Structures are given as structure tokens and as C-alpha cells.
Image 1 (tube, rainbow, N blue to C red):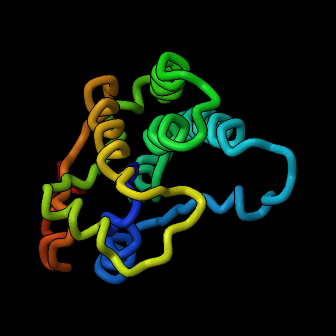
Image 2 (tube, one colour; image 1 turned 135 degrees about the horizontal axis):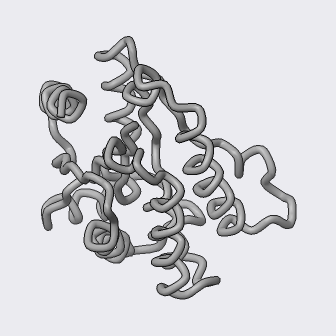
Image 3 (cartoon, rainbow, N blue to C red; image 1 turned 30 degrees about the vertical axis):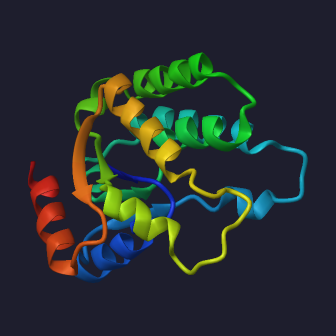
Length: 185
């Protein structure tokens, strides 16, 4: 299983589109749960916590190597760590660090097969993201991309998952070549 992580506006959706076009055998998952229940009293943090733990608990019980190795997930438990601290501040860093450990503990031995691909950003990339002519939504403020990125780097330090790096804003060929290596590793 590959989880694609990165700041907002770094190219995750574009990358998912390239992967869908280039690798016919992959299974893609993008969580749409909050869109379904929006307007109810559940908090985004509570939803994310439950989703992260449920996926981590179910995957090992329903493991089929062929399926597991073809599953590509758009954002996962690292995003919960980042979003939970970047915008909501409902729980402190210690809580999110423990959440990361709990999720990885649920994966158990399967954590060795989990691959996280994180978009690597340069100063040029930050300038590009901050100057994009796209309407900002409730989940982002002005210049919070560096804070998001720093929190993702904390995940690298805290996580026991295998982490791969993907440069942001590269060509389709670069994306296909990079993921070919990740799939075969």
C-alpha cells in the first residue's frame, strides 16, 4: 500500500491522475467521508482518528498481497497529524504523536510493506504554491504551507514506515519513473 502525503497545492491530485492513466492495475482510494457527513456535529479530528485506526486495523485482517501492493491512498494518518495541529488545535502535539504510534502499531508487521510517498518542496515550490491563482478554502490560510511541510517532516522523524520522496511540480515522466521504482522496491 502506498499513501501519498504532502501539503496542499503540491500536486497530489495531478499525481493521482498521472498514476491512474499510467498504471491500469492500481486501486485508488480517496476518503470522501467528511463530504458525506458535513453539517453534522462530528468533528473532523474525531472522524480522521476513527478512519485512520479503522483502516490500520482492517488492512492486516483482509490482507491479500496482490491487492495490498496495488492500493494507492490519497492522504492518510500523516495528514491527520498535520491537519490536526495546523488548523484545528483541538489536541496537542503529544496526542497526535501518540495517534501516529497507535496507527502504526495497528498495522503491525504490515508496516514494513506500507510505503509513504511525501512531496519534497523547495523555496521555489513554496513561492509557487503561495502565488497560485486558486481560491483558498477553510483548510488553509496565507503562508501556512511551510508549517504544514515542517509537520510532515516531523512525521518522517516519528514514523517507522518506509518513506519515499517525490519532488513537487515535475513532469508526468518523472512521476511514472519515480513510482515505478517505489512499486518495485
